[in-house]
Length: 108
Picture 1 (tube, rainbow, N blue to C red):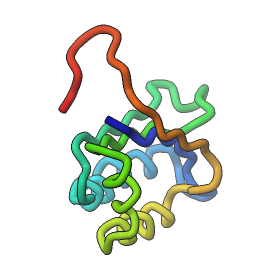
Picture 2: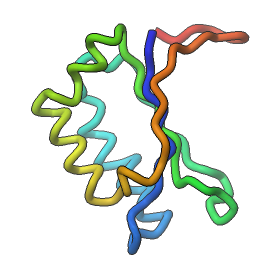
Picture 3: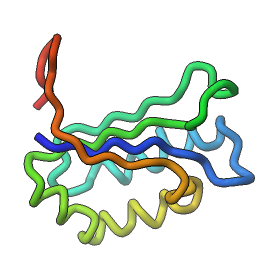
């Protein structure tokens, strides 16, 4: 099961608190409707003043084909457009990975 892991950086002029509120509130409500999304996780640092990134995003998909089609959809474009308002989309790294659970339960 592939997933996208993004390390996010807020745009200049946006405080960490504004970033977290928008990302985990209004933006999350839009992003939850991405087609083919099976799990959606947002994480913010507990001590943002000491962190290089403002958030960690995990988007899980059933397969690579679905992942590849997601952001070409209308809702995918809407999600990207909304994110660009408060996230510097070029600043943080993106990984597309296959998750292997070593301890605990595999999420569906």
